[in-house]
Length: 465
Image (cartoon, rainbow, N blue to C red; front, side, top):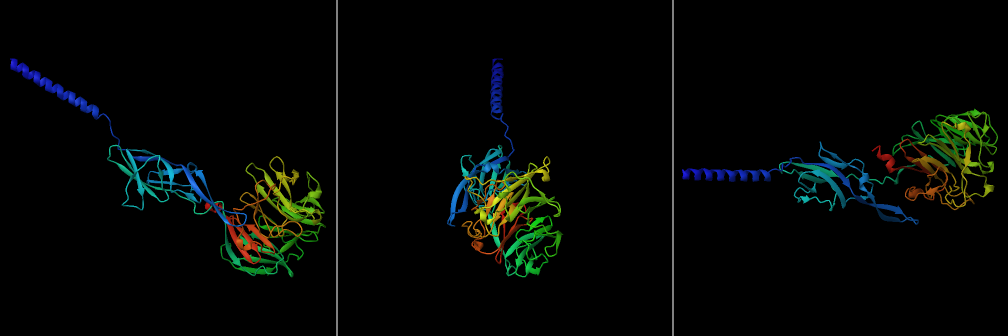
């Protein structure tokens, strides 16, 4: 009996020990290891950027800056296991050492270069910079060690400077020989240059808007005394005035029709969707069809109105306002070395024909007025004003022909040369007439002497690439 009791006690102790051991084991295995492994988000840190500029003497200069990579979101494509930035980084970005924050689910994250198949897998650390100048593989391993995913990680960088203007030589042609005045226009998807010659006004038409084209030259019936450089455009129609105040219009640049009898002292100043504007005997006037002219309301003296080289452009703003800028020169007796500028604005509350004109006063502290250049061209480009031309008019300044592009970011108040946006070096100092026009693809066509150039601000073309 005693032995039986002792056997039962030993059996009980053995069972108790096993139970304790099982409980202990169950506590050790209480953690359930996940088989999930994926990258949930990626953010770039500060990125270094190399930039080029040109010094005052024309030499190339390099400088560096930084920008926040977080402004360029990284997209994680879980279907294709791809991590990349849809919006490319700025041109000149140096991504050889960038802090990259990678949020992931899993036990470990390692990486290596895509083109280094035999390379060592390196452990990802949030404090270490990554060289992402070439694509990487990101390998995420689950907590239970049974699952893993491989992501391809790549950084996209613009291969052209978005805020640089690159030019290409389009043509070298004798089509403009003999022209003393020129005006460029894009009419019915055709690039043409109208020019005054000794025999009249000719029209040179280019066969294509592409990089290579041929020019056909023919005589127009626009009177020889027309102000060719002062031609204005409304949609697919051109307007011009002659020295005796006659107003002409055309839809093809070759055949011109007189709109109204001559008005003494009339020079066309601007054209909008509804109205024609002209300087008539020193007054700024408005007309619907060129037959009757109504004097406009000014906030300053008519003595400050331009009388020659009348240039203008119209621009619509996001707030619904429409602005018309008029630029030109007062008579030579004024001694001005700069242009004078007037502006008119209208909207739904103030119709165009009720809006008055504001003189953009040339205050003593504003040294950035538009220079008084021969063959002045005024364009609207990149939502701002752009002026360019030949040398300073005799006795009115010291600018060299085609020395710079002058931009206005403030509706014509200031005009500053942009040394990052250059004219082609080959045209600097070229004398003679100059013509420029912007086409529907944001290319600037520049005609100087017998040279034809085409250029575009790079970022304006990114959406089309």
